[in-house]
Image 1 (cartoon, rainbow over the protein chains, first blue to last red):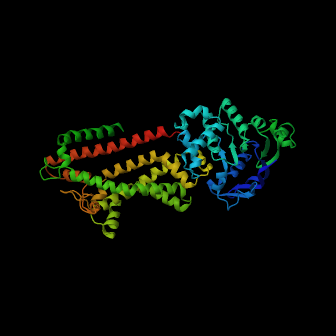
Image 2: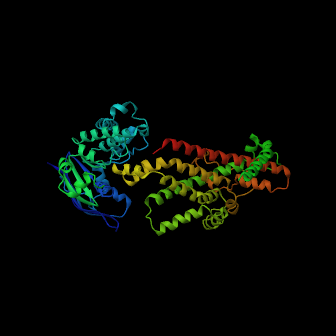
Image 3: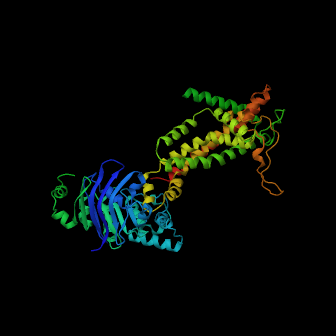
Length: 254
Length: 277
């Protein structure tokens, strides 16, 4: 099994306050879905946002340890690495659908445009491909130039996935992608995510244990900033090794 | 509140009734004159237009750029905090203070004299805080998840500002700009201190001409008058007939200001509909 990334002894804190992530280490396998689960405030979203250096936007943060992107062994947390370079390679989809208030087409084209791509035929093709991958093409192919805000919540979230896919990221980060959606849209997104792993490595934060069990190949359980257990989802959900994991997945706390 | 509105409204109606008979195309195309029925506001509205043009050219780029800098780039420390508080204070100080400062700096120190460029820059400084404050407020209304969407795709800070933050906040920024310019049009006190003339029977040099180099910036250094000063001049004359002229000029000025404010409201409405989160 190929590893796409490797988190090694990662400590993270905001300026000089207490550690939010404490010595987290885990592998991310290529073309697999890895889910991060745990109660609110356990640091799972914080860990996810380390992968594209989102924390850097808000000033004083301290990374310690490394996230190596394989096979190049580049530590994306290193201060010599420009966060923009990292974000060029690692896409993200957020909790709440956040399309730009522009047309559907422009939403997807934006990532390509900022990479300096100007050729219209190439962009057209990419827009179509990404929308097809996100399972949205049939619904919107006749109104690519209408505003993205006219779409339903579930469609908007698939648009955001298409937007992230258009630039062919190495890893796709999903931050509770279905928490703001209804059950039908959620089912759509889950199917979509499962189908995407052929193309891209996925790291997903979720509050929903069933969702992790259904879609993820690997699951990491976090608690109070520490990684308690990591393993194949089937093992984590049926036969956890740690008492805390068992307590959490059986609903005794969290 | 209602009493104040009724009084204001009756004053406006009184002014409109007094001034209305004087309003004709002749009124807009004539220079001031010592015969009230022949006098017009040509030099005044052309002067107002030129001065506000200079104000706009100076205050809009500087104001928007300052707003962006303070909101997006400036480090959050005690120094920027002091600047912020001072900008808010500047928006509230009496306008004549700006006039006195401009008299010292532009007229005497820079030797620009009693010219359109002095007046435009004076009013530019006066409305600069309004533009800075409204720009910052407009930028602040853009939710952080839109910024994060842009950054997560690999956009730089400037790309995020230029492609997203500025377009989505342009409604608020433009509203602030229009409000600022309508304030500049009605301002009198600082222009009296920097030496607007009250009786001008000629126009500034035309910016284009048929002799090389065809474009001329000489109008910037011409003397001028503006609408409120023309009005002030007429009001202060003893003859009753001039008071009619003053009322008519007031009516024109009021209509211009109301129109600009209507434009501002319309822009805000349009952009509210266009950009929803």
